[in-house]
Length: 154
Image (tube, rainbow, N blue to C red; front, side, top):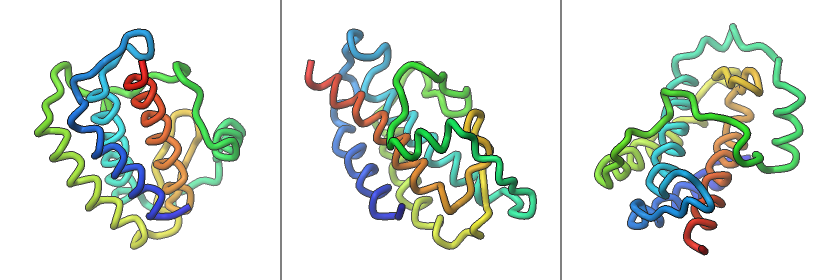
């Protein structure tokens, strides 16, 4: 997986910023703004964790569940809760989303410069190194983009 696919998901998130206040409880408890904010927080926090990691501590412990989801290319809905560090605030401001978007675009460009075993610890999948990070970010962001699309359809 590569930078271009992650950039494409960022572009799709960006195109939905003006819809940030829209919600549909039949699809999701959260607004479009929540899904955008959360996705950007994940991207930015994961990349910061990659930069801070010590590649020598990386373990090849990628879980069976992670391998299945990566192979299938999606995450099921409603099965996981967002950790507090990537949960959006109660009030989501458009300006904050725009600021996070700019940071995400900058951060994504730094991934290719990282050591191949720079990593972050995922609570279900285990250590995800920079080799797998593009795929993780693409799948996670697409998961939320599908929810956004469903909110807009109803």
